[in-house]
Amino acid sequence: MKNIQTLLLITTLFFYSQFGQAQYKYEREHRILKSQFPAVAITTIEENVTDYRRIKFYKETDSTKVSYEAKLKKDKLWYSIEFDKKGNLEDIEILIKPDDIPNDTYARIEEYLNNNFTKYRIKRLQQQYPSNTDPIDHTFKNAFQNLILPSNNYELVVVGRKEKGYLDYEILFDADGNFMDIRTSLPPNYDHVLY
Image (cartoon, helix red, strand yellow):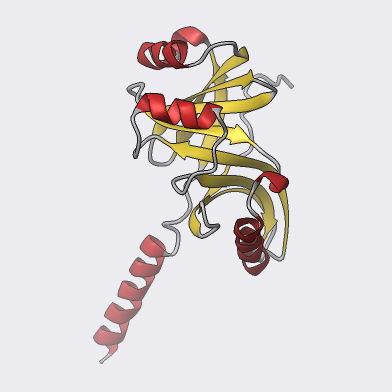
């Protein structure tokens, strides 16, 4: 009987550790040189985007993958174009305000935040155009026209408090405001600071 209880306890702990933390991916982003950015991705940007300003390149690392991001300003809006490590387009994001989201969608997002955090503050809100459904040129066209489509997602960076302390979270919602994914973000990399 004792062996069965021990086995049951070990199994329960195993499943809790595997599935209880599966929704969290720790991510870090740092700036890189253009020469360190995938050449295929630079070509894709140059072929699909014109009249942009202030382009910066970043490498993003989390517990499961490495990706690259180009951030630029075009027509008074800030865009983030994300690629995988081979230079394939993953998505395009636009920095937006809560007023830019349909009211019922934003109400669902707020409901999720209120139910899952004792206190929170939205640091950044982005409208996301994933590239998995459309050809690359359509994804760029839709993003740079700032269209609201059923395939859009909304990505929020939130400082939130749960049981213990505050952490930064990256939370993804679909076009209707339904929860899709959450990641815990690490603080920025301060390797350049000397003491």
